[in-house]
Image 1 (spheres, helix red, strand yellow):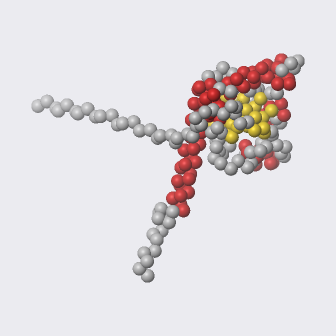
Image 2: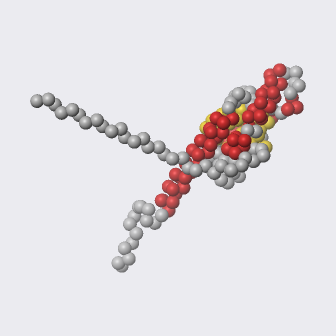
Image 3: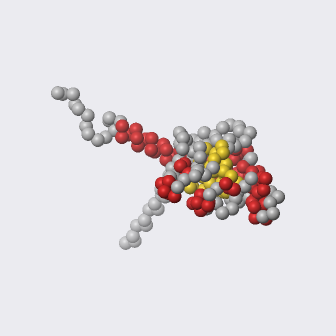
Length: 201
């Protein structure tokens, strides 16, 4: 007697976790809202104990949960420097400036705290910590100060850069949302834990 043929198994539908709606503006700002930052003067012990926000100025009072981007550049005044390496870095920074003026990137920048840092003024310790050997370099950090991505290529496609920035912001929003939900459950009297009194006396 022939064996019955096995029935084909339908593939399971793929499930994906939807990303939160990222609040992009309908129109791009005229330019990225850069704020200046610089490395703080810290002792070795203070430096080791500090996080990203403690090592750079004007970052310690960031009150919301936006991620951070820092653009390390070399100032234009050194474009005619006799040091060819420095002059080349200045020229490459101008190419990066052109990328960062793209409309889609300007829109995506509204999801970040945006800082510019003069690499010329960085201490050797900061350069070593964040691997700033040459510029331009744009570093992207989450709300905990952990590096998520870096942009160094002056040939990067602006559309791809903008998409990556939105992905980073969405990831941070998702983590923040999970943390918020967890906090709500822990403070909700009916959310678990001990049973509430019955009221029967």
